[in-house]
Every structure is written in C-alpha cells, then in structure tokens.
Length: 253
Image (cartoon, rainbow, N blue to C red):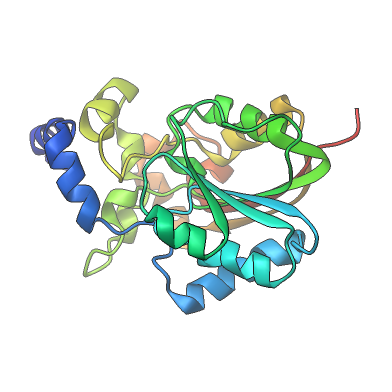
C-alpha cells in the first residue's frame, strides 16, 4: 500500500500555488501529441460520431488539441476545448482555429443546446463534481446529439511504473473518501473513483440514452479478486472493469 503520511504531505504541498504552478510546467497530461494515440482516439470518436458539419466540444484535452484539429480537417463546423487548467498557449489554439476555454470545473461556460457532439477521453474520471459535469454535458448538447466518453477507472498513481504493478490497479478503492481527498485532492492523479455502475446511473439520471457501451476487464484483478477484500463490497462487474467507453444520446423530449 501507499505510504499515507507522505501522500498527504505531497498533496498539501501541491496545494500551494507557487509549487502547483511550477509542477504544471513539467507535468504531462492527455495524449501529449502522440500521433499514433491521436489517430486511435479520433477513430474511436469518429466511429460513433463523425464530426462532418458538426460543432464539436472536447472536455479535458490536456496538452493535446490535435484531435480537435483532426475534427476540423474532417469537416467539423468548429471545434472547442474546455479544461480546468491552461495546458496549451492561447496563441497555439488560435493558430489551430480551436476555441480554448478555461472554466471552474462546475458549470460549462456555454449556452444550452450549443454543441452537436461532445468528446472526452480519460478526463471524466478526474472531475471533482461528476454529477454536475454529466448534467452540464446534457444541457449544452443539442437534442439528438451525442456524447462519446472513454473513462479510465484505474488508480492513476501507478500508471507508467516499471515494472508494472497490475494488482494495484484499483488501490485507490482501499481508502475512505475523506482520506483519499487528503492524499490526492490537489494532484493530477486524483480520480473520483466512480465505478461503471455509478457512471451508468449518472448518465441515465441526467437524461442520456445509452446507445452503445464497451468495457475492458482486468483479468489480473479478476483472478486475484478472492484475496482483494477491499473490492468485495462491489459487484463483480464494478470490481473488475478498468475502462468503459460510452456512446450516449440526448433524446427528443
């Protein structure tokens, strides 16, 4: 398990503005302009919701506006990015003809029924107000429009470690909410820890219709599940699902 006092101290330090600003300069997030990954994610979006002629919003692109740039190349009417931190220089976004908006992570700064489609890749798991974010997506989406979301349900603290530690995939679920927030609330590895069933409930309660869903299961976790007592309070599906991809529609009233 994680050394909790160190995690709390680290989190408190990152709550200091000078330190957080310094870390932000060097922190990598999103797809980071990996051309292969950009193509892969754009194909996922386009498979469900081709951008031709549409007004597209991407939530949480991080440091990469390449996907929205590809949407424009594919005939999107316009492309907008919204994020909680400015990872991309404003001039670069303007050169790419992408509207780049920073907001407070709560109410999306757009009129209702503004976009034809909303895209989000491994961003929704980081939002602090998931129910509000989902409701806001529904509000700014036009009737008949789609939201395509890929949500990573794993503990991001262990990603990229060598050697890999697949048994720690859901270590974030070991901790009560108050302690998790003390450890992670100011950090990029913070996740809201919602499970697949939680997301399905939030989207359906907001009014979305699920037109298609895909899930990735961790077979390592599935095999080890009998010994992972902290996961026993979840259904089997919630305990072993690591990634979900959802294609959601805002239906006619």
